[in-house]
Length: 75
Image 1 (spheres, rainbow, N blue to C red):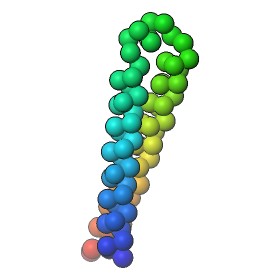
Image 2: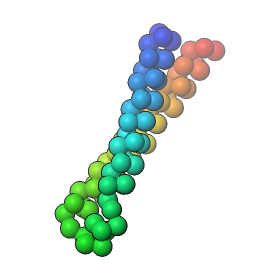
Image 3: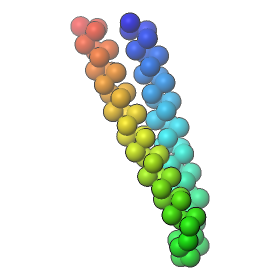
Image 4: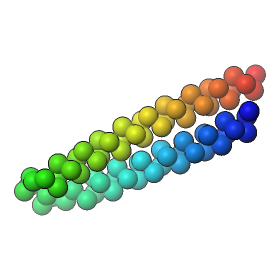
């Protein structure tokens, strides 16, 4: 059981990293010119940033729950 939970934890940590990088890339792609001009691309990048950062928080919370379960089992 512990091995399975550790595998799940590593997968969740990878998803956290993926979401973080994807959100930062979306942030960097919204150039200053896009901000000044407004437009649809700026709106799309903001939505992607929000989605990725929300996913990051979700995966982090799940990883914390898995760590708590591992600690309870180890007792």
